[in-house]
Image (cartoon, rainbow, N blue to C red; front, side):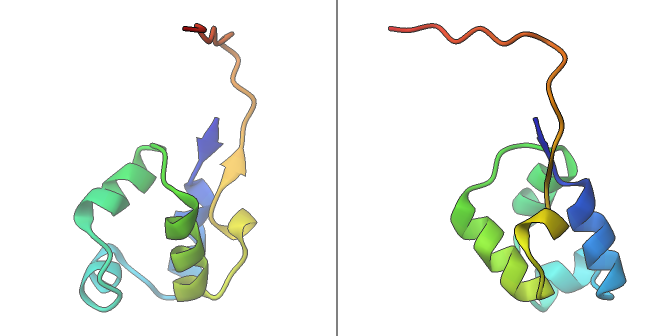
Amino acid sequence: MITYENFWLTAKEKGETWYSLTKHHHLSDSLLHRLKHDLPVNTITLDRLCNILDCVPTDIMTYKKNTEQTVIKKS
């Protein structure tokens, strides 16, 4: 599972808030909601976040092994 805990820590270190990310960097509330709730985002978005925060992807996201076994159905 990918989590975005690091994003919020990095944003705080860089002096960014939800308000500044939406008003100054034009990120949508829905994107920040997705990050807050560890929902998927695409790599273009990750690239943009790294550019805004002047950081690398590991400063934004981390991988935590899922303890539940996920079954993928083939069609």
